[in-house]
Amino acid sequence: MKFDASLPPLSLSAVPETARAAEAIGFDALWTQETQHDPFLPCALIAEHTSKLNFGTAIAVSFARSPATLAYTAWDLAAQSNGRFILGLGTQVKAHIERRFGQPWPESPVKKLREQIEVIRAFWDCWQNGTKLNYRGEYYKITLMSPFFQPPPLPSLRGGGIPIYIAGVNTGLARLAGEVCDGFHVHPFHSVRYLKEVILPAIEEGARKTNRKRDDISATVTAFIATTPEEMNFARAQVAFYASTPSYRPVMDLHGWSDVAETLSKHAAKGEWAEMPMLITDEMLGEFCLVTEEAKLADGLKKRYEGIADRLALYIPFVPGERDEWWKDLAKAFSK
Image 1: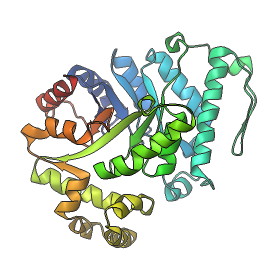
Image 2: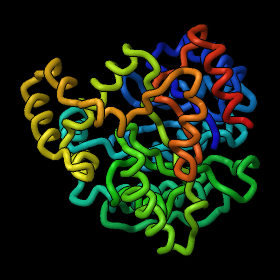
Image 3: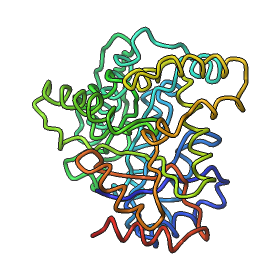
């Protein structure tokens, strides 16, 4: 199980120091997010200021971008980093795609994301191997690539490809990851039971369709942890926020907490954020968050996610100078 870190929302000027510190700590990868900032711009700085650290987007909103722009950006980052970049994509939810990004929500999100991935790889195959660009699907018709716009092949790929991970909560995207992707970003809002009974079987089902095995798909888990009362309060608030999202309802349904999820959605619709954490009981929190003593954290994480996670990151972002020894101890524990 590899141990990764999440880049906090910060200015680009702070990225080089954070990247160098993450590599020194011993993380295997550093992930950027699309929250308050563009997820790709920090990646160029991570590539420039590290030599071994893997890095990628977790996630970039795919439906806010064309597959061509995604293909070019990933190609350049892979070239700059000598193949250390991982392209992580996520669909986001309908309201954000339509009302924040001003883009249409597809009739079939899974089918559109599949086509985006196929188009991206068609570009890469064209650039790396000289194949003719000729993709025709329901959502995309991509047939033009003249030499003026074609980047040179990447020696760092050596016959392989740039890894593509996708993120999701429900089975449709998990199956898609099993079929066509290199990895799956597990949403922080999960329980171990949900992963074992819903997500992993869906990944395996998708993998069988293309004669692949579960081991061919890297499961990347971001975990809630709490070792102090303050961290418990933070996790409780985040769980309440995620549980209020209608498209994430199956996670709550599995545990028989559909009525709580419905109530949380009503509070969220009214902007009643302060009332929501109180609905998350200690039992619920224990399902979605590892609550433990600090000295037992590493062993607790390994035990909780053994056989599930190939990569593990904490929901707490990595900030240089804050708890460095704590992070080093965790990274060392996972390197054994």
